[in-house]
Length: 383
Image 1 (cartoon, one colour):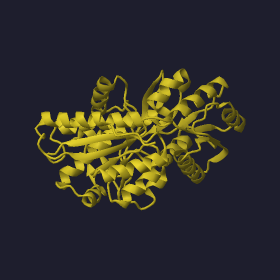
Image 2 (cartoon, helix red, strand yellow; image 1 turned 90 degrees about the vertical axis):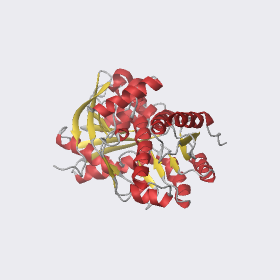
Image 3 (cartoon, rainbow, N blue to C red; image 1 turned 180 degrees about the horizontal axis):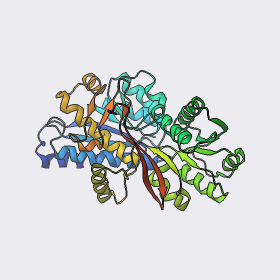
Image 4 (cartoon, rainbow, N blue to C red; image 1 turned 90 degrees about the horizontal axis):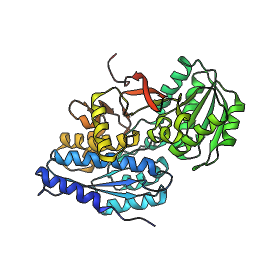
């Protein structure tokens, strides 16, 4: 059953626009398709929080070309079929932009609806397949796996000097996409994959997969799971006395994972595209605002939602009209500076596929917090 849209979010967004002086302009509808329940609830709720905060700020500063944003979120229940239906309903409701979902499996289904109707779709997923289908209306808020995994492999090879890796991944579009990307890049680097371990979504008992990882005796374990599963895996790894380096991507160093895993998260190393612990004054200002509003630290999903909404504002400032095709054409190849749009948090560039590039980080979890141990410049930055 498709759950109803959430008018309280819309009412708040429009009310704040009234206070900003954009009250009498026709609202611009932005529809959020987010995982507010089911296995993706942590990611979706944080993403939605980030969008909500950004919409409030955008409306308070004049909206989109003088028109207030009317943001309405709906719950995909982490179900691709429901996400597809909600995408169609958003289109029927004349949404100018669709933002979300976060889980790649839902995106791969729902983006077919937004593509068919030529509605720009800002998404939170990382599966490489999303932007490999030639969809001119889909845009990321995070790195694609194809861009992130070479950075992980470089660290495994150059810093950990590993010759072999065991891969523990989720049997989902997200997990399989990450697994395929890391295996390809490890092979290109001459590093052997000695164990390829698939897990369910959700997986409750990790004793079997962890035992297989231990028995593989690889130099490094690469973990690519969703948030709750990542925490369970880390706890089981420590319980079984696993003592080899544990490396992952953004999700493994997520705030929720660290909270749920407790001390078991300490020592984990990950490449992250977005982190509230970035040594960046703009990011720290955002984190302070977010924590004051939602009584929790923002994770990368919150930052994706926040920057995704601000990207809409940046495009509209250049476009100065409301046109679906023109919006997509403007965002392809666009580059924006954080000094002009602090809500983007970092300087960012989009390519012709809807993928983005910006600064990223290697972090290590120490005493329950992510510490940045290396900052990686975007590929397009001057040397």
